[in-house]
Structures are given as structure tokens and as C-alpha cells.
Image (cartoon, rainbow, N blue to C red; front, top):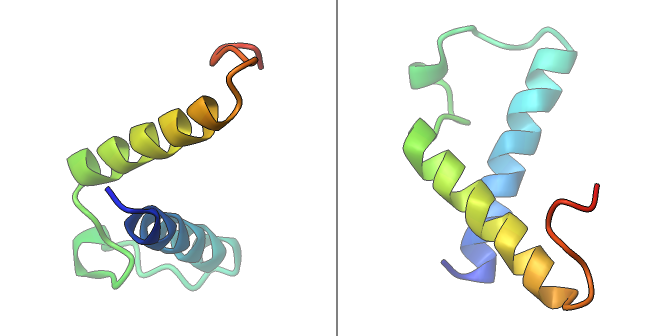
Length: 64
């Protein structure tokens, strides 16, 4: 997954949360422009977390 693809996923998640926050959510996820297959979204989030984790070699993933 490229950095551009990771940013795309984060932008879609952000847009979804923003719509819900302002009550502009259609509550029909599969027909929303923000929709991504859950398995793809989870895979992307995992890759993003791993990418960030590997940038900081002195940190452990579960240190939060």
C-alpha cells in the first residue's frame, strides 16, 4: 500500500466521522461516498499503524 493510498483511507474515515459529527450521515453506509469494505479499511488501518510504528524504532506498539 502506498502512502497516497494510506492518506486516501484516512481521508475517507475522517470524512465519515465529520459527517456523523454534524448529523449529515445518511446511515446507509454501503451507499455513502465514504464507504469502503470493512476488511479493506481494517487492513489499511493496520498497515498505517505498522508504518508509523516502524518509523519510530525505539517505541513499542503497545506503549500507549
